Length: 446
Length: 185
Image (tube, rainbow over the protein chains, first blue to last red):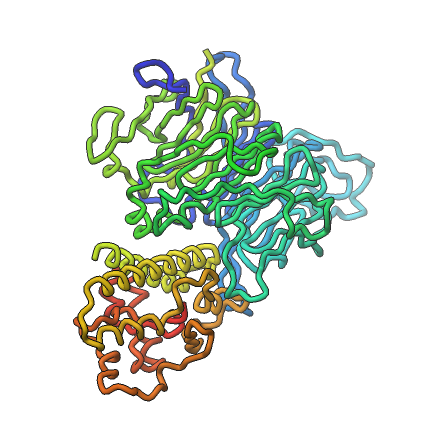
């Protein structure tokens, strides 16, 4: 993972998408990144409620040393800003999560959600259209019946490829609080959506009802001590899901046990180390993301400073702990003042579960090789090398030193952060969003 | 003291963040509000226990000091409780999120669980009025509410100051009287 001795990794920059200039509009800030199940499509959502889907070109025979590029396939407005008149609150159109459905036919389906409403989108291609109508002119007007002398059946003629996105379902009015997660079940019929206090189960075909399966709202809101921060279905067992909390614990629930899964089946919690206790212990222990491994055997949680890998058979402590940016532990007060301590980082598994990855500040991202027990810090920037050249690894040291591939913690730019990441399901291609842009990195193939 | 200064700074920042978040797009975020409340609570606990320790160590025989200390304890909720009511946040983050936190009224609980209305108690000691003085030399922390302020002034003051000065919490909050609901922690 560290690569060879001179600090080179085996990853290289493949593409950068988005505006080059520093002054980026708020609406263009990417807020969700997700590969589909084949890795052919890559969807991004932004704060303006738009979704942009990139498609991987056919593998190029001329360039065997790298995977094919991703180009824009479809762009559409998923969510619009809304207003809740009853509460006098604006509902942001920002896309919080995108999840693809496994492909069943030629069309692609994805779920996208903002704070309150989930939508099912169908993305389909149209590359031919019927022409030669007997009764209609080319522009659609009906011909006069007296001018009809022949019978002609329209035939499909090829046309320029058109990609259409149409909303097939809108799942609304089921969440009082802000939706933070959606997850498609392995049964391909149901999915869950989670807000701060509740998890709801939906059937994809029905928008007028959802079942509440977890409710942690206390009878007296003054007694509230924790909220749900992330939730996901098990990749293989359709009855199992997990949800992470703001207290740093993860609960695994089995829907066969009861209709309401308020009682967990397993509680994954590591006792707090009293020597590291500070004012901010509660904030930094809050789970920001939870992801099952592809095998379904493990689960990964991300809190502010660490990545933890849990064996589902062992609740008492994680089997692996990775420090993402431990040098920030002494900076928590400043990070609290500038609000960075509330940032929610995502994490993701590599296709074979041997590697995991998450984002950090200064446009750094962290790669952890679980087998080799090595890690690397890489940077997403225009200057991080030409496409095709291996990235150099970085080191963060104390103070404000700055030299080649080493940077002092006081020089880190906390406005440049990588919160959203996604890993191709089979190949070693990762997509991650900085504030301005979408970066795609690939592993060098040879 | 370093710990008390840091704790006070944290509390002030938390208050300013909570007020700023009330005006942001998308409404109040429950998770963020909860974390800020927890930070404020632990900072407050540490602040008071540190103050208590320092006053026990360096206390003089004057009764006014101990009087003020016990008043400080009584005006805020007890430090040892683990399930401190989140009244300020609760009123903000209930399902009727529109309700203004300023509309809540004060509930002060003594350790025995009795309701004590400190505002309407007749002062039994001649120097009790010193509690209401806002001089810097008073032992009362200056982020406690000024009980003479009217509700309209509070609302106007906060709307004027906090919308512009979210970042400069210390300056604005020393001028603006805190709403009463925060006191109930």
